[in-house]
Image 1 (cartoon, rainbow, N blue to C red):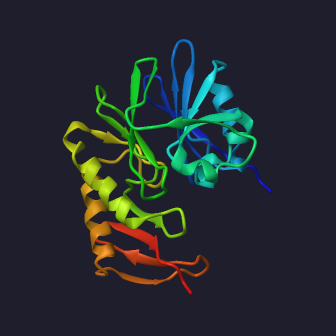
Image 2: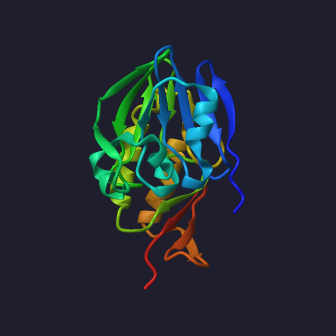
Length: 230
């Protein structure tokens, strides 16, 4: 099988975007250590890409535990992740908890954890208040589809979390999602929320997905994979 190529580019001083055109990771390089947000698919070998950028010790922070974000964890061996997603992580990985208000400093960046369950029960976002920068994992996207089907997702919690993010929208200028367009503007928080509210009310049209056990629902700005086919 052909190896997936991860493109790397410096987005801001000390902040790299790693992207294999399926999912995106973020690497912050400081003077004494580096922070990696998510580890991508296993076949993307993100560890080697990180090591091509820096040989500093790397602390891994997880936005959530889906396999397209956690697939590369074996090569790192440890991560910080919200307890709500610990069951999604393969055995053999050393886990430490993330919680609301935790702060991580690296180089010129200070990331604070915001709990935003819904896409998964352990989803979190990272925000740098000084740089007005939000890293929301999969919970804020342009166009989507946003995955909202399966036992470890909850639409009601997602709605609450989007309203929570809406409350900080005026303090954010740049949003770096893990899928689709990047960067995007913070107004997509409100757009995702409005479409998710319409999904909850049964107002969106949708069709059965060709191979996944869900339907594809089309919002004004956002698509969702939602519902269980029986």
